[in-house]
Amino acid sequence: MSVVNNERTKLLAYALDRASTACFTVGIATPVAAYLYNVDNVDNTISHARLMLGLVGWLMASAVLHYLGTRVLRGLR
Image (tube, rainbow, N blue to C red; front, side):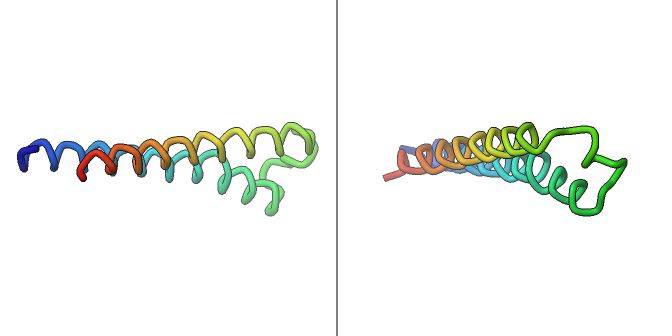
């Protein structure tokens, strides 16, 4: 592979990893902070089961994107 292709591959992997970080932040850190600090009375507007389902979904999306990023980097060998 050429140097340009290697850099494009790394750029794609890094973009996927940044997307996984964004999924974690938006889907997990923000709702947990809102729940802990009772922002806008979030405790009464969403059930615990729905909150947990959302957190698991976002965590899975984050994990899949991170995994895809690592798979892309394996192509550099």
